[in-house]
Image 1 (tube, rainbow, N blue to C red):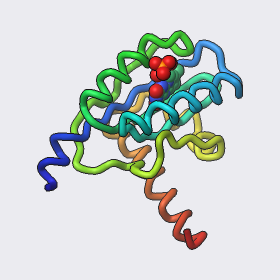
Image 2 (image 1 turned 120 degrees about the vertical axis):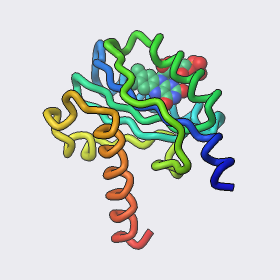
Image 3 (image 1 turned 135 degrees about the horizontal axis):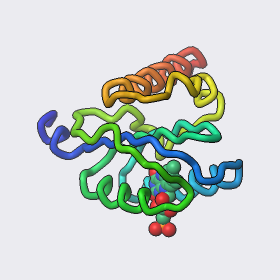
Length: 141
Ligand SMILES: Cc1cc2nc3c(=O)[nH]c(=O)nc-3n(C[C@H](O)[C@H](O)[C@H](O)COP(=O)(O)O)c2cc1C
């Protein structure tokens, strides 16, 4: 079963620069993401600053490949740099169609997100996923 999962899940992490950033732009992206991702079995997390996006996408290989092609053609951001493209046996954000939170993004200082290696980038999301679980546990969810 583990092996089957390993074949099926792909994750991609990229960073990019918003061409224009405000609440409406972000809301628009998240609205579309959540509507589409649930249909394609895609999950993930989007960290944002006014001058940076860092996104993790995870799901079936075909869905991730098609989605990534759409995302790189999107004029709402530029300078897209893929940091990681790998297979994984577990999703970090299995319960979220696209998790994104202003406080979490703000807690990760802009400096800390500069020039991430592939492993650093995965660690950022891994930590975020674990902190989210702890927070939910603390609330008794
Ligand atoms: C930073 C960023 C992240 C995005 N993330 C997603 C995503 O997770 N899922 C998604 O469907 N679209 C995402 N989009 C939007 C896509 O680029 C594209 O506009 C959308 O998939 C088109 O959906 P449609 O074919 O239903 O019109 C993102 C766009 C940006 C700029």
